[in-house]
Length: 409
Image (spheres, rainbow, N blue to C red):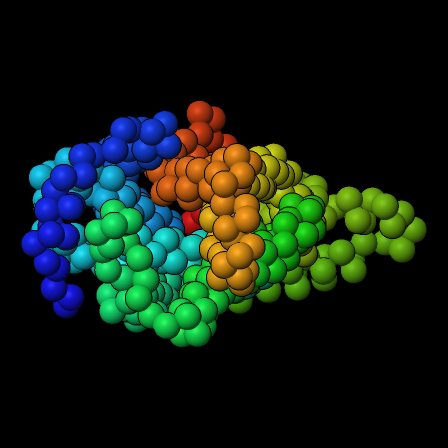
């Protein structure tokens, strides 16, 4: 680690804290409220619910992991914003803080974006592979563990590159320009643009499929479960033909053959349902009754199933909108980083003093760090908000397609 002279430490000590700018005030407020909301949401929903399906618990765990990552990012940013008020004057200590802060912010940001990709993949599987979605258990958690290791590995360059600059009173990079260019391009690509492209493809296919999914058959998870349960019920309602019923049927047919020829066919057919001719129900009349019972059961399930489809489509649209909003808030910052990496020094210096460029820089920072607090609003306002009216099935129970938390089961 680089050693600093006493003059540099004195220079750092003589520099008073700068005035609090509106951008700094906004970032501090974002950190405080974002951390508070994320902790509140995480503590509120940390208690497991035995009535939740396994797929619901998986979705809530993913969102909880994202809340933890966002809290780490906001905590690291808050430490960086308030470190000058702690009375720290040693540049070596400031260098360590710079390394850890930037590493945590970059790794947590990449982790959140890749978690959005995992959730998009789960939505895609729920639409196109519903039975596979129902059997999911540890696969999403293994994907999250892989994302954690990947983010930690690809962001380790920050621990060797970044240091605190006394004159600039900020964190700077020390790698050669050629290596810095390659690393920046690689990080911007894998941490943002690659997952965004995959998320766009998966969500676009889900969005294009939802009209067909809402209009045809049991394509959703709950409809597959309902259809499966109905088939099991109809299978249980199938009449059991024993030797006694077969003997009764043969006896009835023989008695029908003994009727005179001049009898009308309509009367002979009506005797099938006549209680005088046959004292007990005849199995040959059961199929029509079974078809009629199937039609009545289908009619009973039509309205609840339509309500479930409407609610699922509404939740799907909310998830897609919040994903687009979150990824869009990251876009200005990554575009600015890409410009600084690709543009030469003279071009950057020519527009550095422009008012619009300074405004765009501040706006990109505000949007980038505000999206870390957006996950708490997403959890509290959409996912954890129980629907006021829940469609009920025949037995009066809540359908298995939508849980109380509003997450797909």
